[in-house]
Image (cartoon, rainbow over all chains, first blue to last red; front, side, top):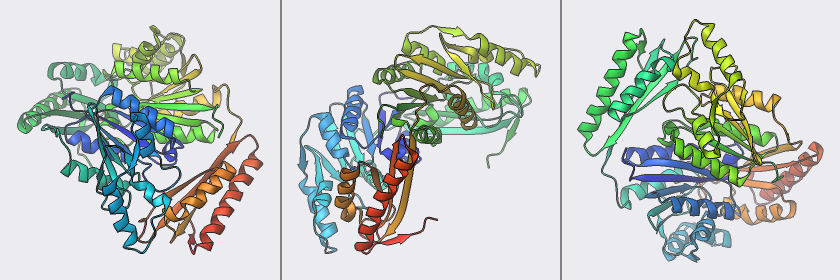
Length: 265
Length: 265
C-alpha cells in the first residue's frame, strides 16, 4: 500500500457511543477514501463534547495524516459543537464565515425564516476555513489545512455527509492520489482458516499483497471462508495483474486441499 | 450520567478501515455496555498491525476507563495479532496460557486435527490473562486487569464476539455498575431542528437529561425529527420518572408549535 497517502476518520456523536446508531458514515467515508488510494489508518468516535473533540483533533493532527474527514456535530442544536471543538483543538478563533453566512441567509430567508442564533451558529468556523457546499441540507461543510493535514468536516446526517464529502472530493481535493485500488475476493467451503493460514502467510510474504480470510462459518464444523485480496499502485493494469496472480495461487491451493469454490451471491 | 463508569471500545481490522465491513461489533458492544450503565467515551478502530494495536492500547489504558472491550484479531492467521499487540502495548510477555491451551486441545484433537503453530497461537496471551469461554468458535477471549482498566478481548466474528462478551459480562464482570439506563424517543413532523433547539437546550439545562434531536427529513422542507431522551442512575423508578417528565415537556412544546406527533413504526 502507498503509506504516504494516509487518512483518518473522526465521527462525532453520543448516539454512536450509546450503540444506538450503527456507524455507517465511517464505512462510507472509509470506502470512498480507500478507492481513491488513501490508506485509512484509524477511525475514532467520540461524543458531543467540546473538549473530547478538541483532544481528538489535536491527537490526529499530531499523527499527521494527509487527510482527516470528520462527520457529525455541525447542526443547529446545543450539542452540535464540532466547529468549536476543532477550533479549540487547533488553537484557532471561531469566526463568522462570510461565505457560509451568505449561503445560510439564502437558504433560510428565501423561505421567510429568520436567522436565529441557532441558525447563525452553522456559519461559525475556525479561522482560515473554507465552507464546502451542502446540496442536501443546510449546514455547510468545512475545509481547513493545518500542518500536514487537510481537515474535511461533514455533517452527521448520512445524505448530507455524502453530499459534502463528494463535493469536496470532486472539486476541492488537492494532492489527489493518482493510485488505483483493486480488490477481489472468493468464497470457499471446507477449508479451515487455521489450515490455509500458513499458505496465505507465504503468499503475502512473496507478493506483498493484502490478503485476509473472513470466516463466515465455524472453524472446524462446516468451515466457510471469504478470502479477500487488495492492492493499490500507480498503474491500474499492474495492480489488477498482481491481485489476480495472488487470487489464482490461493485458489489452486484450496482446490488441492479439497476446498469447494462457491459463486458469490 | 455516571461518569465514573467509563468504557472504551477498540475494534481491530483492516476490513473496517477499508470500508469493506460495517462496524456492527462496535455498535453491539456499545449498546451492551450502555445498558449496563457504562458511559462509552470513545470507539477506536485500527488496522491489523502490532505497533498500531500496542499504541492504541497504551493510549486507552493511560486514559483509564474502567473497562476496555476489544474486538478482532484473535484468530489463527498471520494478520491476527491482537494478543501480541496488547502484550507489547502493556510491556507484558506473551506466554502460552495453560487453560486456553487445554481448551484448544479439546476442540481440535476431539476432531482428530493436529495442533499446528497457527492453532497454538490462539492460546498465546499476555502474562496474567484469564481466558474467556468462546462457546461459538475456537479462539478464547482474554480478560486482563491493568491499572484502572479491565481489558476484555473478544474475537472479530460477530457471533463469537457476542458469545465471549456475554460470557464475560454474565460471569466475570467485577465492579458491575448498579445503575439503570433508560431511553425513550418520539417522532415529530413539521418542526425544524433549528426551531426547537433553544427549547431543548433549556430543558437540558434544567433537568440534566441527555436529549438529542435526530433529523430524519430536510431542515426546512418537510422537517421530520426523532427526539431522544436518556438518563441513568441508581433508582430505576427515579430514572424513568425523570426521563418521562422531560419527554412530556418537549411534547407539549412541539404541539404548541404545531408539530405533529407520529407513532413509531
